[in-house]
Each structure stands twice: as C-alpha cells, then as structure tokens.
Amino acid sequence: MRAITGLLARLLDVALIVTGAIVASQIRFDDASQRGFYLAFVAFAAAFSLAIFPALGVYESWRGRSKRVLAGQLALGWLVVQACALALMFSLHRIDFVSRLWFAYWTGISGGAMIVSRLVVHSLLGRVRHAGLDLQTVAIAACGDHCNEIIRRMERAATSGFRPWAVYNLRPGTKTCPRVPAFDDHKAFAAYVREQHIAEVWLALPLTEERAILKLVNEFRNDLINIRFMPDVRTLALFEGSVTSLLGLPTINLAASPLPPNAMLKKDLFDRLFALCALLAIAPIMLGCAIAVKLSSPGPVFFRQQRKGADGRVFTIYKFRTMRLHEQKEGVLEQAKRDDPRITPVGGFLRRTSLDELPQFFNVLCGDMSVVGPRPHALEHDDLYQNVVSGYIHRYRIKPGITGWAQVNGFRGETDLLEKMEGRVEHDLYYLCNWSFALDLKIIFATIFKGFSHRNAY
Image (cartoon, rainbow, N blue to C red; front, side):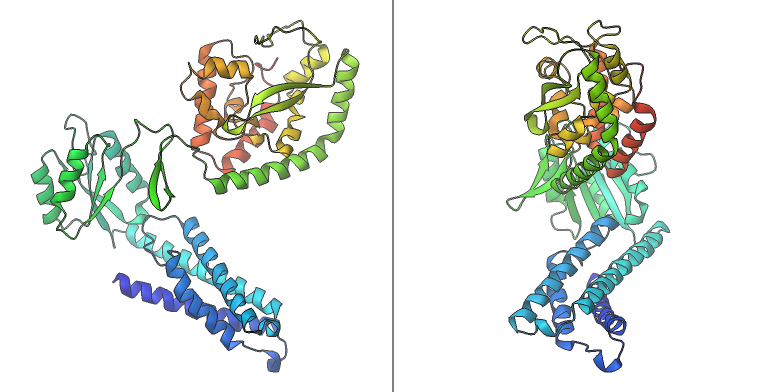
C-alpha cells in the first residue's frame, strides 16, 4: 500500500510540474506561436524531482509530521530541482533561450500547486484518521507520568492516526490512563501485542531501565513490529530534550538552547529590523529625553554598565542616566529603591515609564540584545544568583531582551527577595521553552499597552 501511495505521489508531482509549465507559457506568451514549451527543460526538471525529492524525504510517511515541515521540505526540494535544471541548461549553452519570466511563473505555479496538493491530502488523511480509519495502533512501555503524557499527545494529535492500544507499566504503583488496557507483567503484555496485531511498540523508558529495554527489544526481535525508543530524559534535561543529528548520529540535547539555529537567525533578523524602525520612530522622544537628562543634573546623558549576553558574552548596555553621579564601591551593587534619593525627578519619570530603556534599541541593532528575551542583570547579580536559583544561568542561552515574559507578568524592578528572582527566572525559562514569533508579538503588544508603567518600576 505504501509503495502504491509513493508511486501516485511521484506521478502527481510530475503532472503538476508539467501543468505548471503549460500554464506559465499561457501567461507569459500572448502569441500562440511564441509559446515555446521548452520540453527538454521541463523533462530535466521532472527527472531531477524523481531523484531529489526522495533523497530529501519528501515521500516519507506523513504520519505525525507537521504541515509546516512538509511544506518547507517540498519547497526546498523544488528549489534544488530548479537550480539543478538551470545548471544543466547552462552547461548545455541553452540558458539564453529560456524566458526568465516564464521560469519564475513556472517555479511559483508548480511549487505552489505541489504544496497545496500536499496540504489538501494531509488534511483529508487527518479527517479520515480522526474518524477512526487508517489507524496505527501503538503499545507503550513506560513509567507512569511519562506514559500518560505520550497518550495525551496522541489524543491532541488525533489526525496523526496513532492510537494507544496497550500500556506496559514498569512501575505498577503509578496510575496510567484508564481508557487503555494496562499490564504489569511482561509476558502478558507481549502476548496481548501479538494477539491484537499491534503495529508499533514505543519504549518510553528512562535510561536506567536498560535491562527492561533490552528485554523488550529481544522479545519482539522476530516480529514485524516497529519498535521505537523515546527515552524519558525529564530527570536529566533542563529543557524538553530535542533530537538533532551530529556527525550523522542521533543526539538528544539535555542542556542546550531550545531554539534551533534557524529560529535564532529569524529572530535576529526580526530584532534588527524592528530596532531600526523603532529608532527612526522614537528619535524625537529620545532627543527630548536626552535634553531633559542633561538639564536635570551634571553628568553624561547615558548610563553604561557591563552585562552578560548570549552564551555569557559580556557587552555594554545603554540607558538614559536616571541618577545623580555618586561613588559606588567596587564589586557592590546597590539597586534602586523606592524613594531613592539618588534618583533625579526626571530620572524617576523615565524609570516609571521605562523610557530610560529606549537606548537599548542601539544594543539590539548592534546584535548584543533582542527586542524580547530575558532581562540582563548586573554581573554582580549573575555571580550571586547562578548558584542559588535553579536554571538561572540558562537565561543566557539566548540574547537578553529589552522586554520579556517575566516583565509583562509583573516580575520587574527591584529583586530584594529570593522569591522575586526565582519567579523571574521561572518565567524566563518558560519563554525559552515556548518561544514563537506569536509569543514575541504578544509580549511586545503587552509591553506597549501595559508594560511601560508598573508599580515595581522606580
């Protein structure tokens, strides 16, 4: 069945490539006699697609995979195909005969058609699986809570077609989902898997259960059952363990940035563009603040201080100066307190409205900071809290931000109590684990509408 499905998918792609070329020629050439169909070029592209798409995993099973990944994979494959076709035409000295506008139309039409066809089929399969057809039954060997989490994920992603059919609970004292038959005995579990013709066995066990893992693998070694290992790394990993490939080997990240490199790049591009637009928009406000600071008391306009950035790199942060010049003991940081006599009247207004933070858009533009992220603390605070607040140092897995999830949830200002810092770090780690552009925009809008002024800002 899978072979037939794969063959049909290949034929559909070739048909859409040819159809896209025909439609592009109809759009590009008004005169029917000028509608050169470039048969050789289209044939080369179709042939390349049959070789390149399988290599990039385009025809692998869609079950349990996201639509965004599918669309991205196909788009990448189609661009590679077109690049190869262009290179071949260039080597044959035929590139000058190809209309660039026709090629652009063809690339867009065929690429869009293939992506839309995939999404439509993906949606139809999802509806079929949600209705209880084309299901993949799964037996789970796990320990209590981790097993229940996997079952919840299956139920939330019902369109993937995976259904929990049996549970082998290695810790009988813990409760498992009552809707799924549970077994405490190895032999009874194995017999049930075979009787019910269950297609997959998932080993969702901690690494300490090596003997149980080997026993189950040996049990089903001679059965046509897919055995998958989903290690329970919750006791080891700070963030949810993500799987990457290093040197061709599958690798589970236990303590690494939860944001993949491509997400970091997109976030960096967004930050710099946003900072540039923001600086152009608020230039008059910053000029007014600078003049007010200069007139309020003797001293520089900007306050400079060393802070830690991504991966612990130290940079200089900029703020509008809000205090009178005063001597500070080396290695000792005295935070601003309510009614602090060091704060000037202008400085008090700037701090209450967070206008003193505006120069940090220059830090964002320089690449030291992000618009949204964990707020950077003074180096003295880093030395103090990294050994007493769990997960504190992992705030610096990404660039610090002008605003953050902790700030819009009320954790800003003076951290005179350990509980305040713990709450701030908890929110920062939540942001790292749940980052998305949507969350960044939510934080930005929350900062604009309610984050500039706060009772803890003084």
